[in-house]
Length: 296
Image (tube, rainbow, N blue to C red; front, side, top):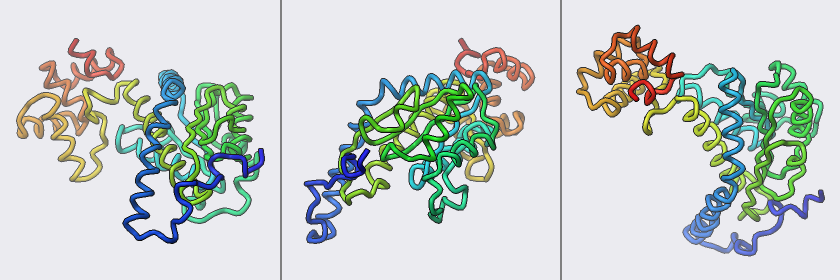
């Protein structure tokens, strides 16, 4: 597709005189345009739902969620994957972000990397992609060869494939079983897809990872019960989560936090079911990690 025909590459009629605006006026225009992004995402919720359900199914089969993209799209995938580790205490391999050009591309553009379909396939081969995994290709323009190459390989392997693009009838959509197309329209700065398109991609990624983690029992009520308390701040947050989930005192939360070897979810079940550490662990195993099912 001709780049000039993509909505993300056309000029925005509302922002033709950015260079004449005061700082405040510029920011008001930018904010007004940004407010349209969440609405555009909402129109894709039916398709996003299908992708979340596919990821849950994959996780339940010990599969993985693999994001792949180039430039801003790739960086956003890497960011979302990295945040899953401390938020949900998952192994770093469970949610992975691949970026064209490798990790050095997180800060420095790697010439030509996104133009290689072969590199996309190679990166998936390097992590031993299987049919249990879900590959989500991310490309604002919807035409990145690196992503297409990865999707083609994933399809050969039998993995579930999905995409996130910001143009309708995106090229990458044809290579995915579950394409998500969030049409945000022209950027305020022509062609700068790190702006509205990047915001839309981040919102969808938030939905995919958080929705899937809720679906496998990583959340109780609206609490991060599988948070990884890797520093003093997070240890205090963990104790507050225990207090919120059980309505216990700080002292009790602290005591049970230690008794559960800093496993927040385990401490909560110990309190709610008046169980020993071993009993609570067994209850959680039976409930497949869902706190609510241990108290049903």
